[in-house]
Amino acid sequence: MAESKLNVLMCGTGEYTTGWVGSGASTSDKKVGVVGLTCFDLRRLGKIGELAMVGVNGKKYPQIRTHLQEKIADVYKDLDVSFKSYPDDNTVDAEAYKQAIDDRKAGDAVIIFTPDSTHYPIALYAIEKGLHVLVTKPATQLLEHHQHLIDAARAKGVVCFVEHHKRFDPVYSDARARARTLGEFNFYNSWMSQPKLQLETFKAWAGKDSDIRSARHYYLDCGLELTKRSTSYYLNSHHIDIHTWIMEGRGVPTRVVASAAKGIATSDEFGCVPETEDTITLLVDWESVDSDKHRGTAVYTSSWTAPLKAGIHTAQHWYYMGAKGEIAVDQAHRGYDVVYDDTGKASFNPFYMKYSPSETGHFDGQRGYGYVSIEKFIDAARDVNAGKIKASDFDKHGLPTIANTVLTTAILNAGRISLDQKRPVLIKKNGDKYSLE
Ligand SMILES: NC(=O)c1ccc[n+]([C@@H]2O[C@H](COP(=O)([O-])OP(=O)(O)OC[C@H]3O[C@@H](n4cnc5c(N)ncnc54)[C@H](O)[C@@H]3O)[C@@H](O)[C@H]2O)c1
Image 1 (cartoon, helix red, strand yellow):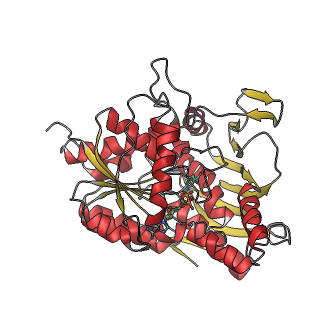
Image 2 (spheres, protein in one colour):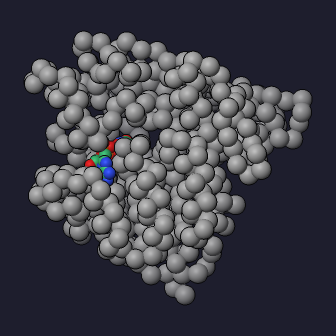
C-alpha cells in the first residue's frame, strides 16, 4: 500500500512549536520555532495532510497566527501556515488536548512539546487512542512512566519516538559510530549550558510588576515550569542520550550520584523560587556487558545560568575515551563566526535549523537535523500505516524509540532522586525492566 498523507496534531504552542513565548517572539535561537515550520513545509511537500495545534490558552492564537504569518508565510514562498486550533480563541483549558486527540483517528500522529510533567499523560492518552507519538525530551520524568509508555506503544503497535534531534547531527552520529570502534568504554564527559536568558525574561516581567508570586504564576501560564523543569532534565538529557546511544548493547549504568550548584537563579536579581538549581552534575558508573574487567565513568553537567554574551546560545561539547582511542566534539563552535557592530561575535549553527530561504524563495532547511528528526518520525508513522514495517522494528534501527531511550530516563530520574535525597541511587535490571534503588 502506498503511504498516505499523515494528519498531525502539534501539542504545545510555545517556543519549540511556534517560536512565540507569550511576551513576543523568542529571543533564543528559535525565533520562529521548529515543529510548526517543519510541519508546514512537510505539508507543502506532500507528506503531511491536516495540521492542528492544541495548547492551554486559546486566547494566544490570534497573536500566534499573526506571528506565523509575518515570520513564516511572508518570508517563505508557498508556505501555508493555517491549522485547526484547540481550545477555541476564547477558552483556557489545560485538558483541551483530550478533545483534540479524540477528534483524530487511529494512525494519525501527535507531536508533544509541552512542559516536562505533562509529557506522560498526553503521550499515554494519544497512544491509547491508537495515535503515533513523537514526544520531546525528557520523554518522562519518572522511569516507571517511561516503561509504561513502552508497553502501551507495543500493545497498540504505534510508533513512539523521543525527539532526540542530536542523533541526526552528522558529527554526533559519525562520532557515535567511531566511538563504538574504540573498544571498551572508559570515560565520558559532557557539558551543555544556556545563558541566563530565561532568567532574564523572568526578571524583566517580575521587575515591572514587582510581585514575584504573580510573576511566577505568569511564568507557569506560559508553560515555563522553571523548577520542575530542572536544568538536568532540560539540557543534560541531550548528551546522556548520546552516551547511552553509544553504549547501546555494550554497557549499562549502575549507580548515579548528583550534585547541584545554586544561588544565581534564586538571587534577588532573578528571584526564582528557592528550589531552583543553576548547574547540575551527574556522576554515573557504567558496567560493560561483555567484559567483567572493564568499568567506565561518565560525568554529565548542564547549566542554565551560563554567562550572557558568550557568542553562542547553547554551549555543547563532550569527550569520550575508549580502550583504543578518544573523541572530542565541540558543537557550539563549528568554524562559522559572524561579528555584528552592536552585539559582537556570534557562532551560528545552520546545520540544526537553516532559516535562510532557497534561491527560489522557499524554505531551505530540509537537511537540518532539527527538521530531519521530525521528518524521520513522519516517515516512520506513514510506513507503519502503509503496512511496510512494524513499529517495533524501529527499535533495531538505532532510532530514538521510546524503548531505546529508557536508560536516559533512568539516569535523569536517578539524578533527581540523588539530589532530593542526597544519596547515591542504583539502577537495577530485572528481566527487561529497570528499577531504581
Ligand atoms: N525550546 C527549546 O529549545 C526546546 C528544545 C528541545 C526540547 N524542548 C522541550 O519542549 C518542551 C516545552 O516546549 P517549549 O520549549 O516550546 O516550551 P514553552 O514553555 O514555550 O511552551 C510550552 C507549551 O505547552 C503548552 N502546554 C502546557 N500544558 C499543556 C497541556 N496540558 N496541553 C497542551 N499544551 C500544554 C503551553 O500552552 C505552551 O504553549 C520541554 O519539555 C522542553 O524540554 C524545548
